[in-house]
Each structure stands twice: as C-alpha cells, then as structure tokens.
Amino acid sequence: MKTLIIIPAYNEEGCIVDTVNSVKTISPQNDYIVINDGSSDRTEELCRKKSIELISLPINLGLAGGFQTGMKYALRHNYDAVLQFDGDGQHRADFIQLLIESMENTDADIVIGSRFLDCRKGFSLRMAGSSLITFLIMFTSRKKIMDPTSGMRLYSKKMIELFATKHDIAPEPDTLAYCIRKGFKVIEVPVEMQERLTGESYLNATRSIIYMARVCVSLLILQWFR
Image (cartoon, rainbow, N blue to C red; front, side, top):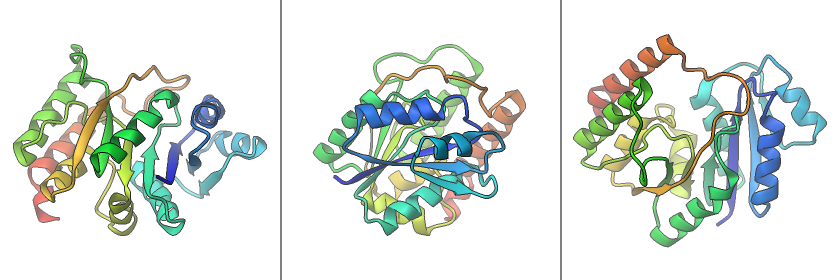
C-alpha cells in the first residue's frame, strides 16, 4: 500500500525532529508529512531547517482541522492509506509496519494501535475515562474498542475520502462508533507507547473534564443525527 504518515504538531519544538527522524529511519518506505498546526514556538523553523516535509497552517485549527488537512493532501496525491502518528514522541515507529500489514491482511478500514489488548488499564482518572468511552462505544455500536483514545491509527482509502470531504468527521472516539455503525471494519492491534519526550499534554484536568463531557454527549446523542 502507498501509505502516508501524517504527523500533527502543535508547539512540539522539543521533539518533532526526533520524531520525524525515527519515522524516516525505521519506516523509510513510507512517505510522511508534518502538519504544523499554527505553532507559536520554533516547530516550523526547525522543520524547515532540517528539510522536513511540512504543511504549515497560519492559525491553530486543532486536531480535527490539522488532520483533515493531511487527509486532503493524501486524497489529492492518491494514497492508499494514512497513518496518524503523534509528533510528541509517544508513538513508536517500530509498530508502523504491524498496522500496515494488519490492514493488508484483514481489509480493515481503521486499524487502531492499542495499548490495552495485552494488558489491563491502570487505575487513574484518565483510564476511568477511557473505560467509560469503551463502554459507550460498545453500547452504541455493539463493538468493544479497548483503546478508543489511541491516536495511533491507520486509515484506508475509503476513510481518506470520508475524512477529506466531510466536515463533521474528526479523529475522535465518537467517529469510531459512527464508522462501526455504518459498516466500516475497525480492528485493534497491540502496540506499546512511551511518555512524551518533552512538553506537557494539552489535556489538563479542566480540559479533560470538558473533553469527556463532549465525547459522551456526541456518542449518546449527536452521532445519531449525522
């Protein structure tokens, strides 16, 4: 498959170069593109200095807008699959080929790199939120997704067209439920992740609560009106 690795980046000056280098070293057979989502730090400067393939957005659009930019690029350049790969160093490039081979062998539309197929979730507020989302996806779609918040996902050509053309589709857990209900095949494969290399997560305590509330409302109510 002709695969594009999309690397969304927002203020990732401390790790974006290392992240891209790991992708280029371990998975050189696949193309990549960094989507600089209106960063206010040196993310764009460092990418251009290192001749990293880059689309730089003039303002911060958020994950959905940045990801759709990458999907439009993939559609225009006729890619067969797109891999979403975080720019903060949490995702490991040595699992990229596993996701690609899993899609080729199963004809899945979405392959999720899952942290929780081979081990249980820990005890924390974040893991409790993840378990709640797993339950709500199973309640609304009848399929159990163990790691619904994983950002390491491989999307098929049909998904590229969907994400590039529909404005109410985002790489979020409620979209997984929507795609499952619409008959698309979603599977998980076991991966390992690591702590972000530098910086802090966007989701602090307040934003985490808001995020959970939005996802729950979307899963239970809004997705039925798409």
